[in-house]
Every structure is written in structure tokens, then in C-alpha cells.
Length: 551
Image: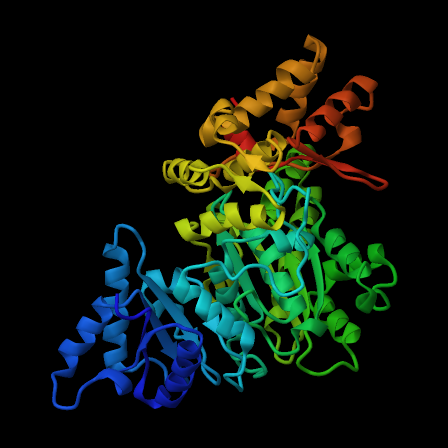
């Protein structure tokens, strides 16, 4: 190959492209730049096509003027070359220049929108982190940990069936492109109160990783001010964030979450009284957020994340079943659900409001949302449907956490995992994480081994084999196994036009005998369920993948 990088750019961005070309050449990266290499008088289209064929990668610069018409052709030719390359050696690296923003996702080829971008700071090319990422993209090497980042020797970087939470962000890889697109959606019209995007629905299949994407990807990017690619929202480091799951009492869950936030606590002196106010006034949440942020800059936001929003349907079905035919109680319960939805949507839509509402929801609950007109409209205008993991993302999710923790996947293991994931249906990410967790448990020193992977039944058999081991070996008699069956059925809500879902209950609802407690502890030790703490500790299945995957 003659060139390591073909530099595709709009003619309006030639000065910036040339400046970066000089920086790349100084670091030993050979580049093709039309100004430097096209010979006056020669057919330029033919020369560009040949140069693209003679390059190892194509860098697509997007400046303030957007993509130029011929640049668009170059980009699509480069993507075609990347897709048709069986070895996937050719790379297309999208780069956002200072003062620019991404093209709309719908106008970009799917391959480009799913890739990881490099974004320079808004006002200067002197962004060493962005330049480092650009060089790594051209050379096809991981950027590695940020300067000064510790290696987490001895820690398990894989979550099994559990969600990646905010504190797990350092181990959350493979979704950089999706994090950046969510930030892009939140930035639409930012600062313009007449056209600001303050509601975002993150929707995906069960097991698509939407909760982890928001908790360990989007929220840390807001709190630190930038994603791994360098994209960020100005001032977001000072924003307030609360995360909740609605459960069977969503107004109480919202009140408790706000009361637990130092900035909002003074405005929510009594969570129980506040939940009653939410029930009777759809403006109460908006007013409370305004009070909490009083005196802070106008562009500061209060972010409310409602994870597993579908619980307002699944958890309520169980409550309706308990109520039976009591119409008065059923009406009060439905009023609670409607008040929860109304407060969130009003706070996210009212002009001059400062609440930013993000929900995660399983895609098979669209039909139930359509009963509520305002919710239906909000989702139509402000949602992001999470795509499946691309293979590069899966590879990063396997290899990068291992690198941070000093683990060494044995030769061939990663390729076996990727090959097996290709055979899995959508929503198989929990199976991959559970398999990686079991590989970590059975590691040989630093090594994650092929033998352990084969012995556990590979991805398709690892979860069931692990659960059966707990059931057959750790539960020592028929009484414990019968308790286990009853517990798992109690923690499952049968779907009505949707897949079955997990259900949260208090520990006391499962029985308070020593036998029940012993079974719960064994299931929790095996990461099949989670046990909450506090005055009314709750229990739930670790993930719906267990409902589908354990016969």
C-alpha cells in the first residue's frame, strides 16, 4: 500500500485537513491529500479512485459545511471497499472537525453511523486526545487506557447477568458510537428553550444492553463532560442526576430518588407527602426541579433516568391481580400510573423547563405505551432504537476489559466467542457477559482458556449449565429445590402479548423461614438473583435471559 490514510474532505475544510495531514506525516503516517498528490492536467476522478484503492484507510473529515458532494461519493466508495474486504483490514474513520457537528444519523450510511467517531474540540485542532484516537484508528490499534488510568489487577471486569452501572463505566466497552449518538440527540437545539430535546427514550430488545448503555455509557459521559471519543455537552459535569426504577409504586420511587439527591432534598422534605402531590398535580415535578436548580446557570439540567420503564406495566399487572374486581382501587392505581407519566412528560416538555428525562424500555412494550397519547407522542419524537452490537463492538467488550485487568484470552478464544455470538438471536448480550464471568471464575492464572469455554457448553450452554449446577449441587435436598422453583415462578410475570418479565418482590413475600433464606443466598451467590438491602429488601431475577435460558 502506498498510503496509510486517504483524507476525504470538503473543499471548504482544506486548511484543517492539510494541517492534520502535516501532523500525521510528522508522526510517520503516510497520507493522500488531493492538494499534495493530484498532478495538474491528469484526470482527477481516476486518480482519486486509484489512491483510495492504494490506501489502508479512509479518513472522512466533517467540517462546519458538512459533507461535500464529491466527498460523499468518496465516503460511499470507501465504505463499499470496507464492506467487501473479507479481512476487514480497510478502515473508514469519521472525524468531526472544530465547529462542526455530525450529519443527521438517518442521512448517513448504516456502516458509518455504527462506527466509532473521532471528535475534535469545538474551537481548536490542538486536541491531543482526538489526534491520538485518529492515529490509532488509522493504525488499527486500540487507543488504550487514558493517561494515568490504573490497571485493575485481579478484578473481574465482566458483569454476568447484572447490569453495568455508573460505577462500572471503566469496564463498559463496545458501545462508544451509540453513546455519542445519544449525546447528539440530547444536544439537538441545546440552549434554545423553544427547540430543546429534553425527553429521550432508549428502546431495545430484552438483552440488547440498553440499561447498561445509559447507566455505564451515557450518564458517565455527562458527568465527566465527554465520551471516550471526546464528545460532550458543555456544562454537563455540573448537572444533577437521579436514576430510578418505577417498580410497583412509581410515584414513591420518584419521590425517594429526588429526596436522595442533595440538590433536590430541600424541595422534597417528606417523600410520602411529595408522592401524594405528584398524584394530584402533573406540574409538581417541574416545579420541584426548578426549586432544586434555583440560582444555578440556566443551561444546568436535572437528569431523571427511569430505567426499565416497562415496569409501569409489568409490576402493575401483579398489583391489579391482587386487587381483583375492586373498581375503586383499580381506578386509584391507574391514576397513579397516569400521574407518573404526566409528571415526567410535562417536566420534559414545558417551555423553560430544566428537567431532562431519559427512559429505557423494552421494545415489545410499544403497544402498551400507545394507550397513553402524550407518551406515544413523546416516544415518536424522541427515541433511539438500540441497534445490535457490531462485531468490532463485541470484540472491544471482550478484549478491552481483559486488558485493563491484566487478563489474557487464549489464542482463538475471542474468535470462538464471536463466531458463537453470530448464531445467537437478538438479546444475547447477557449470555456473553455470563460466559465471560464464568471464564474469569475458571481462569488459569491470567489466562481465559478455550478448554474452560468448551467445558461450560460455550455461549449457548453456559448459562443453563451454571444454573443447573446451582440447582443440583448447591441446593442439597428436595425441599430446597422445591423452594427454588417456587421462588423463580414468583419472580416471573407471564407476558400478555410480550415476553415474560422479571418481577420484584420483598423478601418477606417469599417466606421468612431459614430454608427460604438459605435458598435465596445460594441463588444470589450464583448471581441468578439479586438481593436488595434496607427496611424492605427486594428480590428479583438477575436478568430476563435466565427466564428464557433456564429450562
